Length: 131
Image 1 (cartoon, helix red, strand yellow):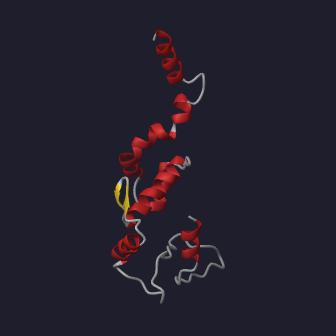
Image 2 (cartoon, helix red, strand yellow; image 1 turned 180 degrees about the vertical axis):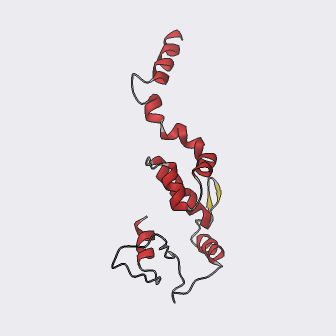
Image 3 (cartoon, one colour; image 1 turned 30 degrees about the horizontal axis):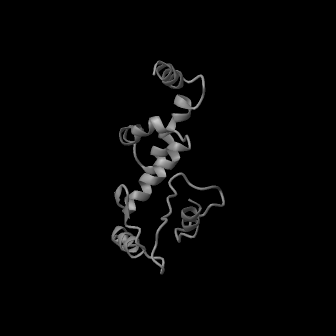
């Protein structure tokens, strides 16, 4: 994450921040070495992953979009609100819910089974005693 923020800070999208950062300030993160931009970033990213032998994972082929998915997943697991992530990622909270609600059990695992007083822990013990 720090690397991405460092890249964004070095962006050539100069903005006068003497009076704070404007609400619409949205500097680019990825640029070519000369500072120009490209519409081929996804293809170049895929080629780099392939060269580094990182193009495949247990979940399938990695793409530039995989970074977005990983970021959203990490933020959700860190407890960041869906609405905040949605605003940052340029989508809606409804879309975050739609595509990431399967993470609810993971996000609340500690509350579900992490203590002696958790309902699921009690239920598991109750049925274990019957065996």
